[in-house]
Amino acid sequence: MFSPAEDTIAIPQKVCDEAISSDALREALPKKGERFREESSHLGTYYGDCRVTAGGERATFSYINNPGNVYPRDQIQKKGIPVSLGGAYGYMAPNHVILLYVPCAIQRSTDRILVHTDTSMSTQDDAEEHGRAKPVKGDKELTLFTGAVARGLTRGPLKCPNADKLPEGPVKIHWP
Image (cartoon, rainbow, N blue to C red; front, top):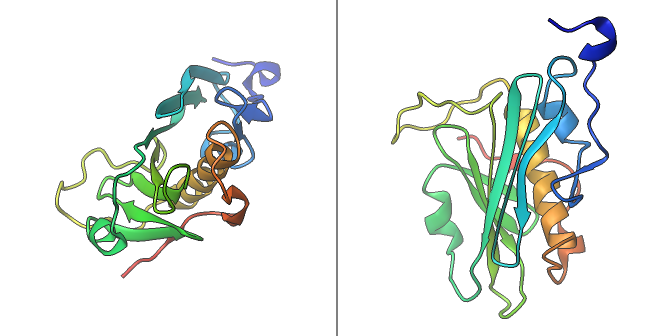
């Protein structure tokens, strides 16, 4: 049990090796409970991940930077519920994990990084594998977190050209 002085969770301004603004993360995690912890964080040139927990909940992301691969928007977005953030596109899987292909034209103008995000407050572990995602509580927080991660990675450690073109705000879910 937590005392009133201990139960308000303090979250640093920047998380995940100080690459990601915690503003959106504050919405994805509880305000009270177990203290904030950054359990793992590795942000490399071609792969990275980070997992944070607070109040018994978690938020995670990973990314793959594989220059030279082609990711046709129409084929990618058929895999789930389409999502977008400016020139970035992807889909929400049935279990409410977002996979977002973000422009990062380091070698070729078509290069993208694949960003994978989820939070325990939105992820549906028991979702049908081939079903369609339906709106659930926590989706708004997930879209805010995903937007913050995409901007933080492209403007920070990955230094993607034109990263400033990614708009502020959440990823948009294009519900049918």
